[in-house]
Amino acid sequence: MTETAAAGAEGFEVVDVVEGFEDFEPDEHVRFARYRRAFAEVAPEDAAGLAARVLTDPETSMASCAVCEYLNRRAAELLTEPDFPAWHRELAGVVAGDPFSVRRLRDWALLRRIALGEPWEEEQLLAAENWLQERLAEESSAPALLDILAGHGRTRRTRNIAASRLRHLR
Image (tube, rainbow, N blue to C red; front, top):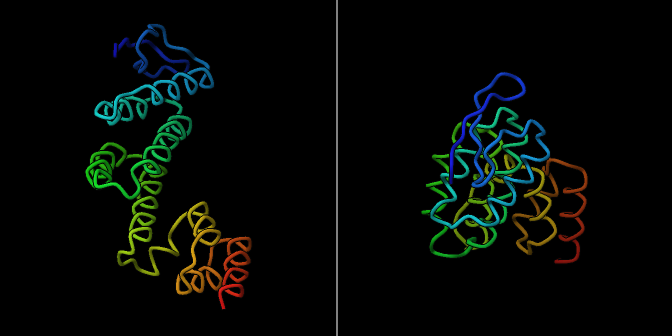
């Protein structure tokens, strides 16, 4: 990948993170599309470096979204694989300064523990983001997990789904 520095629309120094694009594109929608394409094509061993570079974008929410889209795809692929812990550790260091990505990685680690039948804490489940609580309410058949979500899930939708699933399990 090439690095070409250019002044961004708001005076930030920005590094173009996608090979072949030498000029800074001020439109964050165009940059987001480039980041998505780069993540789709990146070799696994280069993904952490790409994520670190994307997170330097001055439009932090867009950069976070691009990185989290990659995290979601890769975590789903590796969820029950032995490579997940090493991948998780590497990316956790890279995204440490981005709260959105940190939460997303935390949630994927919890989902892995649940999927593998490893221990997890109620507090972890209650701290999980809406997407994970809803997914677990829809997919889990563990009464203890569903009971927690039915009583204390973040959203009414999650609580209702979990309560309904509990009724069907009993």
